[in-house]
Length: 247
Image (cartoon, rainbow, N blue to C red; front, side):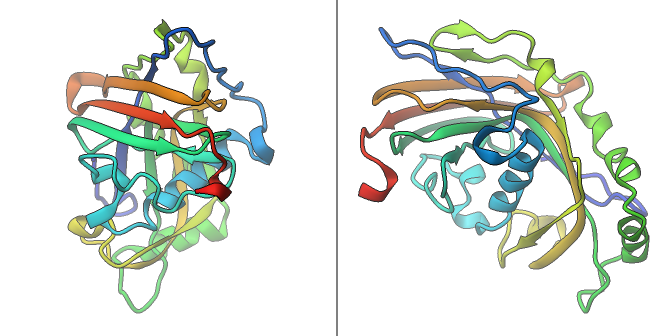
């Protein structure tokens, strides 16, 4: 987690995830192009959905903090399954994923959480509300984009390295809102439950087409520029061969 507080930008959360999928004898899954609209949403819209998912789950069961993978299914719905990194260090997770689910993988991502002016008395809310009223996306993105520069990214799928990962850089095309639950992952930084807006994010995302039934291993190591943040995440996936409705 990276946190940066000043008069306007209070919090940046950096969550890194990378993926290696190794499945002997199986064809590699495809990565959908960054300018595509998979399952009816742009990459930017999927990034928004990922952040809304991440803050909607209490920290004690949040997949970002999950040491085993037992909580990976929480909050999952629709055709895309969200994977999570960790907040630094090493994680090994065993996860069962229904057949037919694409995987959204944020290689590196950061969010700006704007403060609304309400009874929580969040400091500096007036500045955020002025930016929201002006729909000043460029200024909001200026708080998050620099942290994405120079990120070290690696990814392998079915034992083969994915090239040109910088092409998968994403930045919000529109301001949005997230609703943080009680006990959310931001509470240690002093952010109580409730709505946050204006929000924008930036990062590098891969949307991988559904893997074949059976076992797959996903492994990632990565670091921000300068090495201030690094992690090592392994996913041992079982694709069930049954639809989500059958589970």
